[in-house]
Image (cartoon, rainbow, N blue to C red):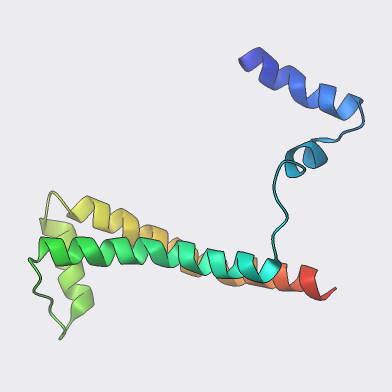
Length: 112
């Protein structure tokens, strides 16, 4: 398998297919605005999983006075749901950080 991975890209390039066209040709075309909507769904889905785990870990009782501190407390103390909640929180934050750059790139390509 490793041998084919090192041989296949030069062969595709040699026959004129080009590596990007060979890979991107397999993907369906999608409306750029649907891509933006899909990316919003993707980075918010991690947050929804975190909220579900938060409700499960707190047995349905949420602290609305300071919900972030309540989530941090559960992430630090709960051995079952805490690590998963922390990973979901990190995934959501990464999505929030990367979305503006992705959206700017998609809109720049669409408007030019």
